[in-house]
Image (cartoon, rainbow, N blue to C red):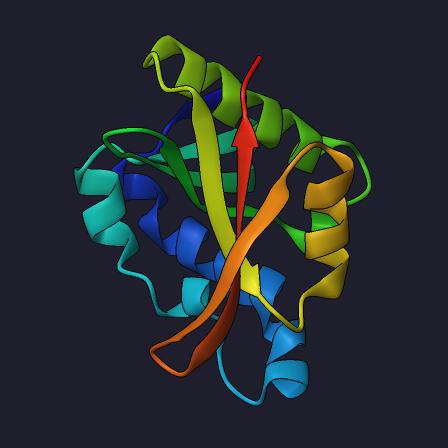
Length: 147
């Protein structure tokens, strides 16, 4: 079940993000951007949803509506729940949410060293739009036009 996150979920979301992104620290030489985010603010803004399985937070997604697209700010699955299709479920949720908001596309960015994520996004229809360095993070920006 995907539902809006509540303040009661904050600790679980932060722990999930920590577990999901910590393996990238040696590759990047620093914490990935999602580990630095203010999830209390994202929850307060209504931007965060969780995938709940048997009272366990298995995944989290942060979607921020913009004027012309939906920003997929973060999607993460708990290491304990990987390999079960939950990431794909969350990405379909992002597309459905964007369509419901009448937004024609989804945008996202990921770190240049997260090559497996870039390849995944390309396989499901995202195209690279540009690269930039922000806050010391080397990012690949991508977009997907929704049918």
